[in-house]
Length: 108
Image (cartoon, rainbow, N blue to C red):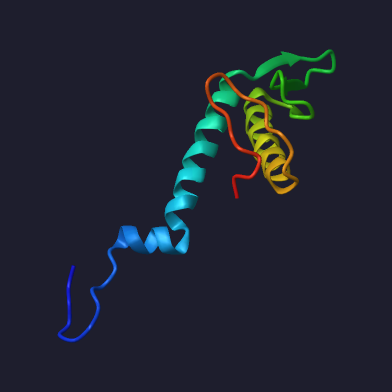
């Protein structure tokens, strides 16, 4: 930490993040990343009669995707999950626990 004569000590990066909320946001981002990773590990996929791929995450109502390939289905399913989480947090709706990971509905 540097000081100029007659001035108050300069804030460290950590204290600035705490004061500005960046530190808090980093923790939330880490929690969201872990939640998304765990949820995607639980995703289930099947090929429908029309040849498209359907994917869903059991226990997360409304989180599903239907795409032409498995890779596209996985990518879209993760986008749907991320948007679903944003809406849950925005509306302060309960977010189901995934394994040992839980998120507060008032995360942001």
